[in-house]
Length: 166
Image (cartoon, rainbow, N blue to C red; front, top):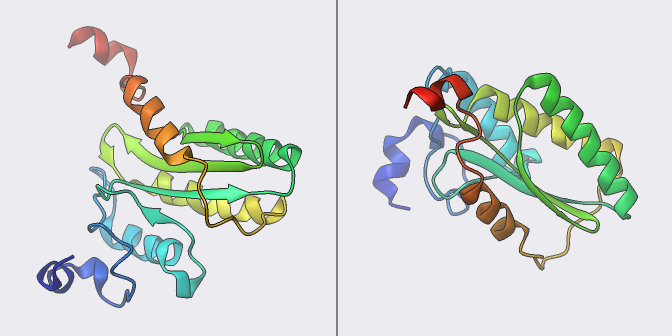
C-alpha cells in the first residue's frame, strides 16, 4: 500500500498494521464513517485483540473460528444464526468440521455497515462463550468456498419488489 494512501486516509491514523489491510474500508451509504472507523479499529488491530481482516475490496470483514469439536462449532453457528436473524442481516459463511469462516458485508447498499461491525463483535463474544481454540496456520479453503457461493447466490439483499421492477 502506498504511503500516500496511508497518510491521506483518516482511517489509518493511529493504526500501525498497514500491511494486513489491502485498502481503506468502503462503508455503505448511511453509515456514520467516524463511529464505524472507531469500531473497526478494535476489530482489525491485533494489538487491540482484533482477529478480523478487511476483505480485499474493503467492503467487508472476515475471519475463521475454530472449536474443539464439530458440536461446539455447530452450536456457535446456531448462536450466530440467531443473532443474524434478530438483526435481519446474514453472513457469508462456510464450515468444515470444527472450523467456520465468516464474512460480514452489506450487499444493499454495498459496503461495510454498522450491522456488520456489531455482528463481528457479537461473533467474537460468542466464540469465547463456545470455547474458541487457536486456529491452525493452514487453511481448509473456506474463504474460496464462501467466495464461490456468494458469487452464484444472486442479489440476496435486494427486496423482491425491487427485483421485479428492474
